[in-house]
Length: 70
Image 1: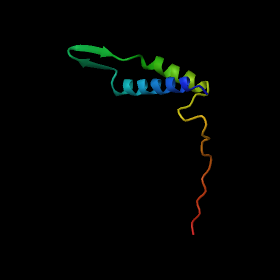
Image 2: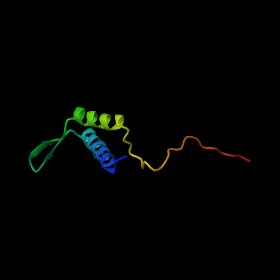
Image 3: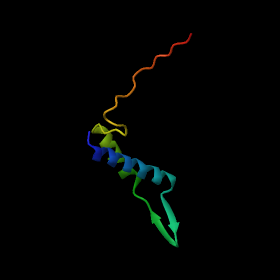
Image 4: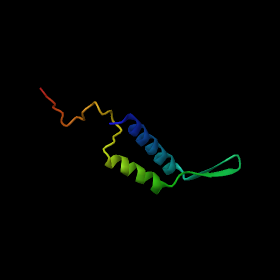
């Protein structure tokens, strides 16, 4: 998997988080509006559909865990 695509997904997830924290804000008398949430979600969905993950691709996810109690 491309590191570029993983970094892009991370950036879009961060953008989504910032939008959810507040769509617009005022700074020095100017009101600024963040990107459209629906557009950001659409890009995230496309990247996820392409198989991009936030985890390192070299590491296999843990499928099970065994605990031994004595």
